[in-house]
Length: 194
Image (cartoon, rainbow, N blue to C red; front, side, top):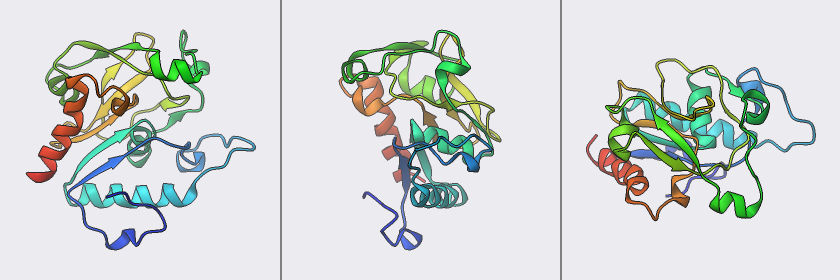
């Protein structure tokens, strides 16, 4: 079910939580700089942080995509890079509509026995690039498990939990590959077995 800030989300129960992409997280939540003339979604930030807190307390499965991965990191007291291309060399990625659809870069799996390593069953894979921000300082109890050669973080997870994963790329746009569909299949599988 899709949950919005307009819903009575405080009373909704769930077995698994999928946090998807969208607007930037309000920088005050992690000590970052506020963009001028940018419209932040404070209600969404509040709702998703509360749902994430409940998911963690109740040992629910969590998959964060793009903004969702960033939110996981912020929730765990990590920070974000304001602009990837300013933080890393060779991180000025194309951002046109066609580039969002077709451009790919290589993510290297840091640990083969990690959740992302076991799920994708590969040492590296090609992922899309539809983001301008990324993980900076890592949040509490999280590990970087997928990264580009230039250092941009592509996957974070909490190894102490069965399924608590954030990916910077958008696997929903890579559904033509079984390995990326597995991210969602495992989320559903673990949600039903908690």
